[in-house]
Length: 110
Image (cartoon, rainbow, N blue to C red; front, side, top):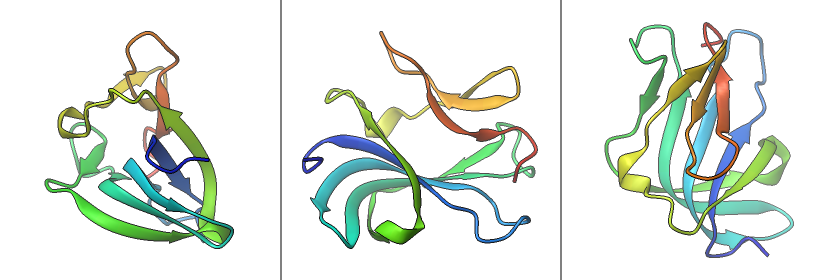
């Protein structure tokens, strides 16, 4: 269903102080137990001027389905090499041309 689609996977926070993590990239495998994504990790952090830290290089990630809070399907033409994060009120979002921005986290959450 999601295989070969561009997605954003947001993980549950296990404890209050944990920094919110999202994976943005191409879904390689999707099954009942896990999701495999080739992409970048975006971590909400207070120590960055932009409010997030984005991996410099693409990498492969296998994510257990139990740890996934939400999955957002992105347009097929989403450019994984040019991710930008902006703010809308208190929210950190990835602007998506022609549709609703993709939520990453809230300012100060990390």
